[in-house]
Length: 151
Image 1 (tube, rainbow, N blue to C red):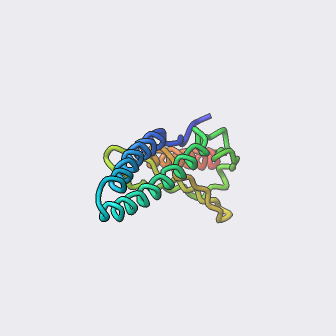
Image 2 (image 1 turned 60 degrees about the vertical axis):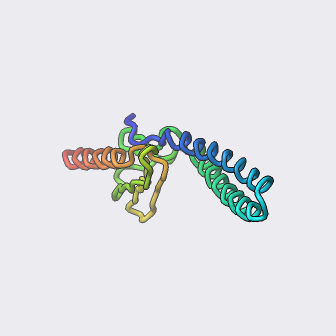
Image 3 (image 1 turned 60 degrees about the horizontal axis):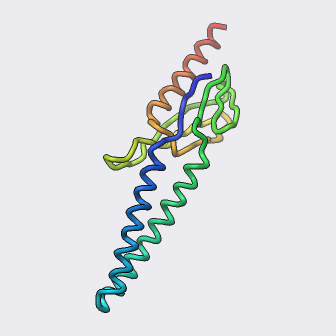
């Protein structure tokens, strides 16, 4: 069994940092509403609304990330196991990757897209070091094609 792609580990940490920052901003918004004049109410409510949006997005991302297994793709002989689904290597047309935009302190991750010969597309956006994972998958496909030609 060869591991091709794993879940990005740092995404959980970066989302928890965002939630901690949001908690701080909630405190600031409550202070603005309670202790600053009438303009404080407007700015405080706007800040509170923005924080609520950030918290909802971060929690949704955490839930989505936690649903993804640690190992996303493995090669087992002539089969690729992608998110628990077994796909014969001969059915895969191509594999592509797309790096997510990240800040300097965030880990690199991205979208791994596998297009099957039937036209179906399998993808996952939580792949750690996605360019390397795509390279490993394409190498597996090349080795498999070379093995098939020799037979």
